[in-house]
Amino acid sequence: NRSATSTARVRREWVQTGTPHHPDNLPVRISHGSACLPAVGGRKDTMAVMLPELHRTCHLLKQPLLFMDRPAAMFLLVDGLRESSAAAAFCAQRFHTFFLPRLSSRQDEPEDFELVEMVNQAIEDLEKSLLDSNARYAGCGLALL
Image (cartoon, rainbow, N blue to C red; front, side):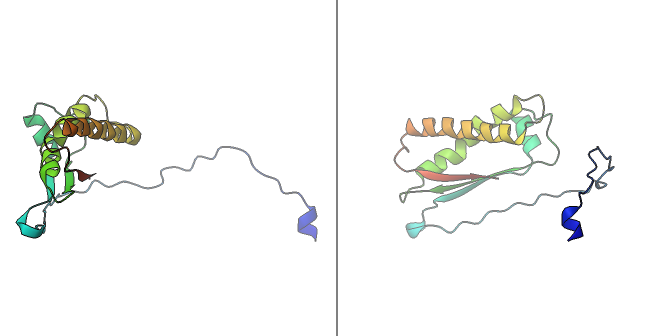
């Protein structure tokens, strides 16, 4: 077999390829909504916190996000555990007080791993605050979008 015995020459040099695509700026419209089925007895265990205009919210809280693109939004979903909504309400009302100061303290846009670390630190601090509250035995699950 001739191809098995011959040696191939390999080019080992940098080749400039140019722009892989041409990005387009398109308008973005953020729509939001929330639906929740009450638990047995009419108790609302699941809560959604929606900040569809994150820049405006942060500006009103005196925590501007100078580096972030517009529009930007934050959606927090909290689900109560152990047949109680106490911890869910606690976390839904307070998560932004732990997360937004960390985010607004940045001068430049955080890398993905830095953003994940900020969220993790905010959740840890929220958990410590929850454990010091009357809702500590209720528990909740949390998702941030």
